[in-house]
Length: 315
Image 1 (cartoon, one colour):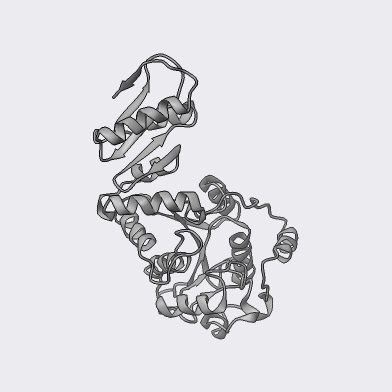
Image 2: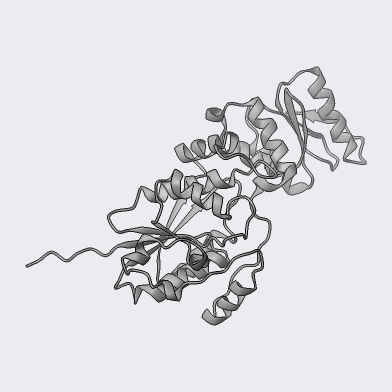
């Protein structure tokens, strides 16, 4: 008896946003109930945000569509450290903040590439011209060349304005059923979502690396601490409070009760906390060098962001 030939696998890079949902639906149309190729959605979780919705929302969507869903967690371990190094020193440079969009895309594709065998291929929801740094032809070509996957990365929403890919040439994909969307308008994608009768999250927030304030915090942190010594806890602290930066220390001021609690819970023994003994006010943390200057500054901020004049306690 002949051994049954395994089907090629189509790995859809799935952030959970509108474009990636449409890319997945288009592949479902092409796969004929997964008899031509198998579909697997792949979601990467990053310390600075990357998906367009909560992970449980992405998971629910893939479950409803009866699609296998792999989640790659880059918030810990070797992947965390490797990703931080890319953020600090990207080959293709930063965007408006400290965002390494092209290098980030290469990182995602290379990790997915490790799963590929024979006729497998990768699908993304990228739209030509939608994002200024990573979704123009030169950037897409750089990504294809750097990952050595030219012809094996299909972008179905813009396929008709891009070069034909290997799965199209081999007949796995019908190019006639793909699209030629380009530009920043989302109207074509919204119309397609209506056609498929699917819901999608509206863009909100996005990647913290694009935000100037957070970018300054992270850049300052990179100057004070080696990549190998940075922990997920450190990134969590960068997300909260008001930050007052210097070359030797960083002072974090809690903006509300919830952030005060987080500062207390996330603090380690190398850091110092200040707060009022009894009255309501901010919790203040010193990271880095703890000396007379940083201590006086921390105490100053405790009073500055409160009307109370109670006794300060140190922890």
